[in-house]
Image (cartoon, rainbow, N blue to C red; front, side, top):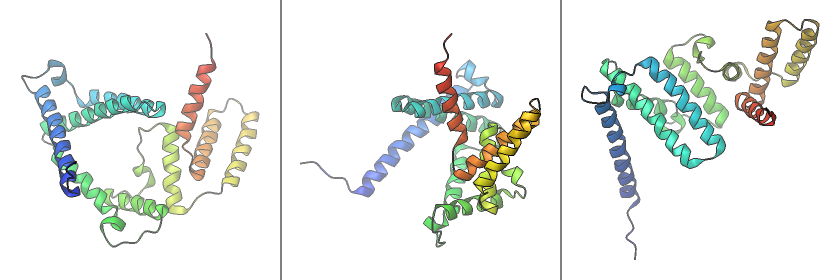
Length: 234
């Protein structure tokens, strides 16, 4: 006969186990950065971490697309390491620590989910998304839409985020009118084939159409490029 743990006891056990491993990671990074730690780790700067953060994020995305979950587990760990490393550098600069980072995200999740942790009623995912965007703008005191966008994001993703937020504020664009606009710009491009700004305008409108339809144009184009690359033989 198996002994059955009460659910709350089992839950506390897993939380405790997770926290032990997380604290262990934080301590390892502290040791690596200490005077008696690793010479390479001690010399890493924020600018170095920016590069590693991008690399590890893209490597994680690769494993997700390949559905290689063993590698996904490893890459998530690598990303955890970079994030903890970043916080350690900021702690050394006396800016903030890991406890403050976790407090901030916990507070944000509760505040932005009043339909779960409070009494506000939000009927569907569209209302939830609109509430999230408005609360985000209010918390960050951003008055302009341009201030909400991650300026270092890839251009197609940036366009998608722009039009997604715009749709939450003003309503979705008419996809048929967007297609007509794209067709007009393509005709114009035929007359002016060297006009780079026209190509940018067409891509921007395609990004708007994708956002209107709820399509992830960044990932869609990436898949097309990789499929095309496989067909090329040297």
